[in-house]
Image 1 (cartoon, rainbow, N blue to C red):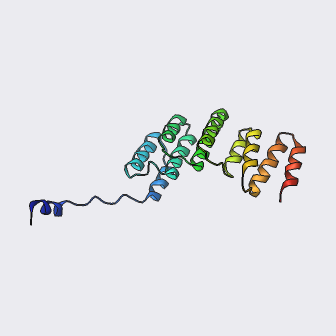
Image 2: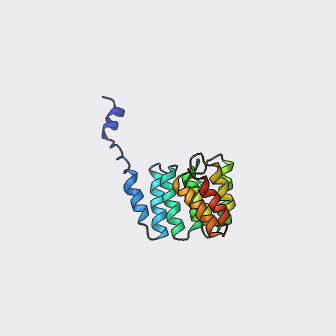
Image 3: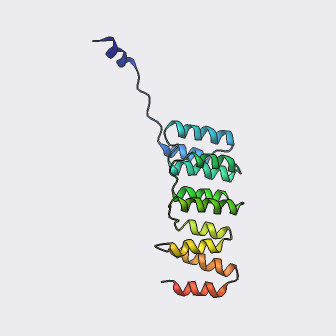
Length: 170
């Protein structure tokens, strides 16, 4: 037996990385930014830095704790953000609707399609015109989408348009 094959027998294989679900649960429980950064570092080490769902958890926790700069830094490292991830970013910008609309524009430039969650987020920023454009382009409208747009028009005092949208419901 050669010395190379003998050495290979002595090398212990590295243990497999822990499954992502417990790590993501731990991310949700982070109480400090230092702790969150440690969990983020672990996600990077085990190869989940490009997992949109995992990174959306990091962004969500950052936004809940007013660490928007770090949330944006995380977002900018993701090679292929999807609509789900953009929606998470929009929600993180709830105090700065202009930024959210900027990111919405960026999402559209990347040819990503808004979904039924995008629409209520935009309405919550008071951007009824942008929300209506999204609503009109939706291939399938859920009950939530219909009631959200009707409610948006009602809250803005445009009862006539709210009624017109109501009449369009299937």
